[in-house]
Image 1: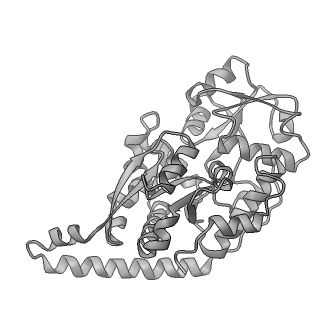
Image 2 (image 1 turned 45 degrees about the vertical axis):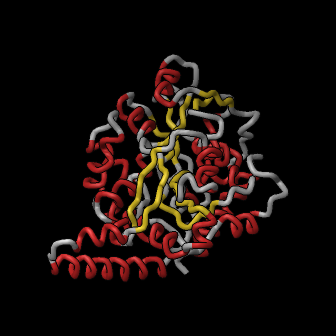
Image 3 (image 1 turned 180 degrees about the horizontal axis):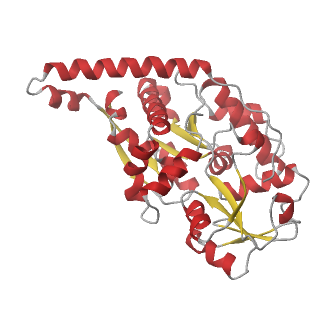
Length: 345
């Protein structure tokens, strides 16, 4: 496996302290409410909940904290009645839906969202959720054992703007391989990536969990690389974005949503099997045991907020400029500051 510069982002001690306080506070609140047991109290509480629409990709295991937050009551603890919207359209359409109020927030991949956010959608990133759900695979007979082995080869991806395509293009660039001229990329529907590899139409495939993990296991493929290597071992890949107008007009709701998802993410890290069971109805191609192993491999304890998160956005902007996805003249620091909001401050 290829390794990059092994610098890791520092632990966000302030975030950990906040999570501890929030967990104690919500636990005490839950006990207090349960102690009364009076008729009509629950109904009154439901009426007081703030309605909110949250868009997500229900088929991606990296979004598991979303149904966890719903089923384990994290949204309710923070005063929210959240309607989950499974969004299958393009990222541009998703961000437009959030910016225009058709949805209030969404969870998605940083390497898919950053380019559209450069265009000026009124959506602010408030927290990282976790990292580590993209993988690049090859057959064991291909001779490809690291990223250098991709030179002159063809890689199958689910689309030309996918987070996996962007990520591995970036990592190839960092080891001196031109991702545009030294490697060929070919697009297939995600479920057909394995067939393309078997037929020899491509020599490697790259995508996200659960699709890529399941292919690795069922087809006995070799994992050449992933986004848990080197400097990316502590880099978030899944993020929460909130409508800018909601933050400006109702910051408390944006804060509550961010807090709820952070707590759900920490719960997912502590209870991967239970989280996998909650998510399982959305991934019929994988069983709970497989989903549990996927979640254990993700960095659900790494969910940065504040300046630590803003810096990670800027680093991704630098990466995307290096492969021509973002405009070369874009200031990464100014961009990160513009698209980020520290709602927990």
